[in-house]
Image (cartoon, rainbow, N blue to C red):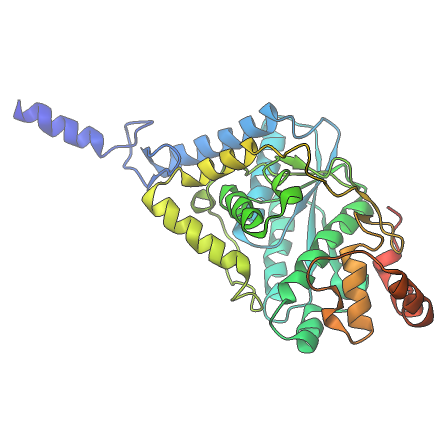
Length: 347
């Protein structure tokens, strides 16, 4: 009997999949203790199933992978490249990076992206805030300070990715958003009362009615399971970003109940928007042609404020362009904004 108990204890110390090697980690989704070798196999197979089951790509499509040099995008570039070869997806893959112009942060992280370009044999395209908007984040922060700078960066980055994707003539943009990111977004949209974004933030494919659809192969992947060579320094301008507080709350929930992250995503998927709720109607920006529910897109409003020395002009909820602002635009702002590359691509 003693030998039997000893054998059970030995088996319990082995990988729950292969029963041969010692476990290297405990998976938060399944609580399985598995070895490193089995984890890589299971991890990549799960991403493959997500891609196939959700029909994320079609053979022959050109796919841009949003590459920041962080661990999510670095692992996504590796996995997409590997699965494309292994399962013969027939995709043309590209790396797409945005240079926000943050000294000591983005310039270093782009070195990781350039290594990825060589390691995985994927062409790299870099678009910069300076080229697109005439401003770097260093210059913007110098004008506005550390408060609200994430608003500018988030709006500009989203449009910069779409413009870079348009330059590459891709069919879709794949991003490294993981389960932790999506659960944070669900929570943030609830706290903000942002019904429009809440209704779509859990979708694995978004923007199908916009210029470039986006997909999230890591939608059900926990952040702690994403590991590879990557650039690990946090953005120097976002120590007090609102999302950071949501992230800490989600981490606390995960420590108590590991499945909390997936449960939050499931809750977001199950939300139903009342038919009486008025949703914003999507149109195009009258200035640059980018998608917008207002007369001006958020990027153009923010740029107008920067170019006129009124950086707070676009902070908060955008209510569109009033008649007064249109008149003011004719007198003051047209030359400034039209000289920026923000309007140089036809959407």
